[in-house]
Image (spheres, rainbow, N blue to C red):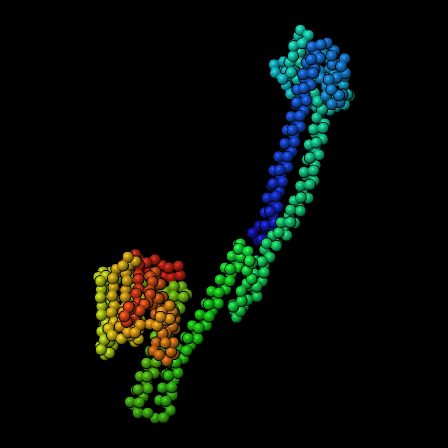
Length: 469
């Protein structure tokens, strides 16, 4: 059933529902007519019983003398004595009692209604009998009145034939109408499918036609267009990522090649060769760092950045990062200040958090001025790690895209860094289930705040987290 087309399933479901309605309606109509006919026959028998009772009290052969209380072949009557003999009867009946001995005894106790086949006017006919006791002519008698059921059976047979003959034809018409209705209702879906099928990776700017009606199909079209928009943005982002990565990789490779070619072009002194090798080594280190950054981001996109979490003193992480940049800051006449107000352990991946803080301090020393402050404090949302500098801050237009890959405030390709540091920070924080925001200070400087949950982290939907104790 699930392999059938939707329009076929809708047609079958619609036809089945209508068939159930037809069956219930036909059954109700048939039973209602049957009960109406039975009520009419029973009322007629009651009236006829009163007439026969009046005749029985007047003469011994009142039925024969009157020629019958009703038209022959339609209704008839018979009067029986206690021993079962026929005291009087309608002309169309013979002298055979209409009731058996047990039925006669029961009729003396209470009225009795029986459907059976009897001889009426020399022909077998299905009739309904009403037997009831009466006292007449100084004795207990049983009056039996009857009526033919031929008209009742003919009416019910006619209705049954019409239902059985007309029902399938009506269902066929309903099935055809249901199929046409389902096809018309699904025509916009088929149109959207054809438009979507015609799209290619280079035509994601196109959109499917959305019906004007605000219904399920219209919302489906809107959802498809939203998906296409996200795919287009993802493809654009991927192309930009590849272009930026190619550019960043090409620059150090070109510099390294230039240095080596110059060193080999003519004989060099030992000092010149050492200088060229150190320059090539610096570019190789830049390539290594860039490759590592791209690997981290690729892992975060693919299966999630793997974490190894354990209870770790937060102050120790801050101290190690400060010690790493102490000499560089001192050479520039600056300091890296540590302010640990958290002063306890937190469950996190110390290597990754240390990497994130190092990236932030690196940015602060490269692009900011003055001292750099690292702080740790507890907030209602968890552990907050803050890195501040005393520079001019980011441009307001840059803040919304500060954590995007290859995003730099000046967009200059020749500047230091590949624009991946903040993107790696966000990937690490996201893997911990936290959040990170960048803002400019009220007077000067840039502030980056990392908020991490204090509860033990669980593996994200696309990541791997292991906890060491």
